[in-house]
Image (tube, rainbow over the protein chains, first blue to last red):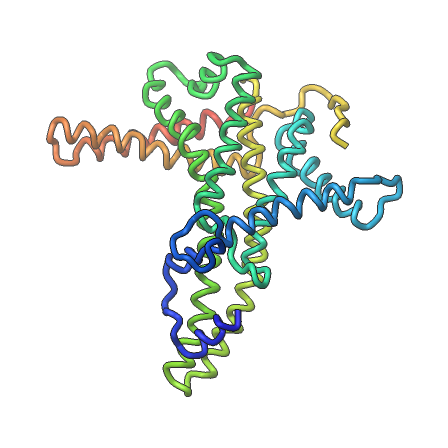
Length: 265
Length: 78
């Protein structure tokens, strides 16, 4: 970390930041470039999984009628996802999916938060692979739920054939197919990825920009201070985006499952 | 907590998308319509060598289709 600060002070950090800044050196083997097997992202994802498992196990080990602080926190998170996402979006059947949504919400929230937690400072979700896998899980889930609920033929009939006169159906069916089975998972993944990517990029621009100006000309020092103040402000904005994107990802997954379960009008 | 399966009164409007879901559905219909029929038009262009006319027609058709879908699927929650 101090090496990093020295690099910045000596003006060796590349400005403007590029996509290369998202590909960190590997942890194992230490410092290797382009070694994908054990990177900071691998570590962060495992930490997120571990933290969530331990947190919910510890808080639920001995549930009390009058909850302890930790139990209250865990129950609030679960209660929020169950009541404000599952039941709100899907109706009373949604309670069945509350455990999945809670896991999804907590995992996305925690991995997103790594973007602004010191020493982590980058979110795994700023690589498309992680949101893509999460989107695939939701995609498989809502299709599976729909097929199990309606049966194969009826599910696709319901998903693909909108209530419209027969002569415009040839126009509409390709749009329905494209929007339901291709845009949905794609936009789910890209929305989360792009938000986390852009957030990290913004913080890099303003942090490195401060150093770049400081190194270019001592008279620009006050401006670089402004740049770092902007970094602080953007970190707060990033905190908002982190929570919002975790919420949106979960709500949209819930909305897709709701659509798969919906009866024909 | 997960075992609270108390049935709610029937007849709740559970069967149309709400809030954020509705918004994204509408957006994906409008964008998807243009993309799908634009692509089909582009294929026709490649086939008949019509120099972009078919793509234009496709995009306009796709827009119309997207609008119809938004109205049909989201406009009248009955």
